[in-house]
Amino acid sequence: MRRLRVNETMRRLVRQTTVSVDNLVYPLFVRSGNRIKEPIESMADCFHFSSDLIAKEAQEVAKLGIPAVLLFGLPDKKDKTGSQAWAEDGAVQQAIAAIKKAVPQLLVITDLCLCAYTTTGHCGLIKNGKIDNDETIELLAKVALSHAQAGADIVAPSDMMDGRVKAIREALEKNDFPNVAIMSYAAKFASAFYGPFRDAAESAPDASTGLIDRKTYQMDPANAREALAEMALDIEEGADIIMVKPALPYLDIICRARQRFDCPIAAYNVSGEYMMIHASAAAGHIDKEDAMMCILTSIKRAGADIIITYFAKEAAKLLKK
Ligand code: PBG
Image 1 (cartoon, rainbow, N blue to C red):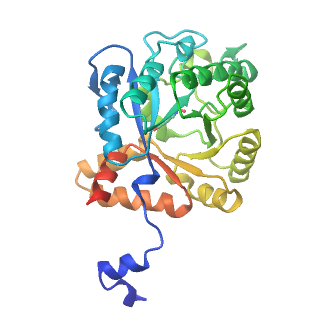
Image 2: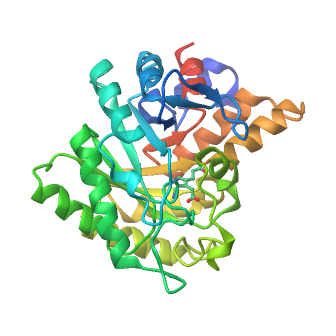
Image 3: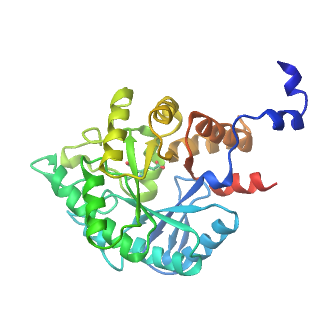
């Protein structure tokens, strides 16, 4: 077997999986205000941007050849229903417009959820101590519309309510946005690996609601067949792209999804997975670039077409060399 490993050229010739810059999506955090580019404490090399500075960052991303960004918003004020999520002048809505004006060819994907906008920090409305599924999906459809109106190319619901893909697809069709695609966080597992992100998005659930975590809507890590059922349902409801999240502890789910479904599959290399590499490299235990490429390759090899990763810029630079 070693004959085909003798040197890099030979290895290149027989390589079975390659990560391309075309596969990468770069997440960005936007907030209201002006001239803000603040480092995010919990996530190395990541920043909060105001919408006036986001265009410059988007230009840099596009220049690296990365096809898409995924936007997360932090509102000025939170309320019970998360109403800033569909505000016309919200941070995300303004950022979409700014990016589309500066770099029209860069695809703008928007995360669709209420958790950063509600005082409870939950992804859905709470009624009588429980998440109200059906009222929540009506609001999510409203958020989707406001993102579409601002110019989003793809909306990405991450809330894990039942039936939201159908509600969003219907709202988009009814309001003349037939070409806005849906990338659903279809198999999203309840995970400790979202920790750094929740600090960055100020979206940790408030325990005083009585709901201390997201386990009544995000999936149980133990369930693989259920993940396939979630993905099948979302495709049936109209999702164009399905996502598995997190990526690394769920490579088996990506692999099984690839065998079962023909639509594009995205995998989210989440904040905790990213910081694990950063922290370990900073402590001198591993080589960051090698570890990064090992991980991105594993996600691609498992069967993902699209990899959402905070490493996107770094990986794009490396792949250019
Ligand atoms: C919002 C959302 C989360 C992430 C993406 N969208 C956090 C959560 O569900 O608590 C996590 C992303 C990451 O960890 O990088 N629902």
